[in-house]
Image (cartoon, rainbow, N blue to C red):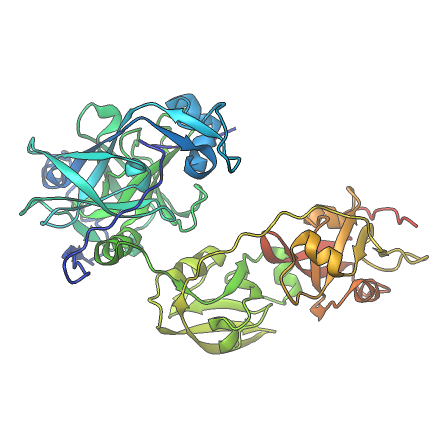
Length: 511
């Protein structure tokens, strides 16, 4: 099994901001929006000219952390729990046994630590981009420049959701890198990765862009550029540049069986990095857009049920009441195919597109609703704090779907119950939710194959609202098709599910 290991230095999450007297800090960056160099690239017999141009902009980032007691639950990054990561980097702070706090958290004594990563100078007055996981928890940060100078750096802001951070040194006239337009990157473009792997000194590796739009690390916002240019521990936060020495991305992670480079590395696109950097520098935090929808990708079964000719777009599974999308008239079952004039390929692309819009902006979304195309104007709001939902546990049911004598119905082997007060308390259901609670699912049933589980709440069956167990039974009796479209809620959110009983054997009905 492949193990994903992040090239990391430290493990504690923290954030700080350093702003000017007026509370705002403008970062002046250089941007060249011509297409990424490919056919006319100066990368010929020697890479030396381009390396000479880029090398001064890439720095070594050294971090140190004093000995401390940490709470495992709140401090350990999920990336450190990956077996492949531990095999390569060893046990991280918080791993293993320890005493407990009064709140029941596991406490671990962490010794003093040192770490190493890379960074990219993005402005002449000392702003440097790096990865959040490079500076996480650091008590001291030192930056080594290519000219031999070593400067103390402070954290301006961090964004764990994209794994980016901005640090700053007190210096002027630094060799800032020039950004490329990363949206113009294509698979096959030649690139160089520049950083400080293993602490041996600045190193350059060459390769090409081998994939785009990768989402492999489990971050909230990720749209990685994949490259076969060798990336190793210590490269985190370094530069991925094109044939003209322009910044294409920030090197972040590798996919590897043992933690070393296997030719599959990932970089955060330069456009995303620049957007995050500008917000961190001016506000000390990142403010993202919000429209209030839960989305999912469109598989062949959903495309058939919604009569879609293509699988591109984001299927709206749930609309937040009184949210921007609800106020604009967006409904569950709509498919957003374009947002702000840009094509939406899937749910992740819509999430990224919404996040990049400044709150207060009106954006036009192209929506497919029952085969008709609509243009809907949405006033994007600021993303609120996310609420956690309690995990549900199953309980005995009150009804069995598809259990009529002739077995002419659907959802065979699924037990359901009404949402009474006890159920609402037990499963911590949202106020006002209507539907039927799934209490049991036969293991070999088509519903189980589709992912239906006890604790799910069925909100709709074949686009009909379900008010209780009786509706659920009625809507699955003597149906014309053995394919059932469900809209389901559970602790992870709302989604559409297609239960296809033409492919899986029906579960035996139980009395």
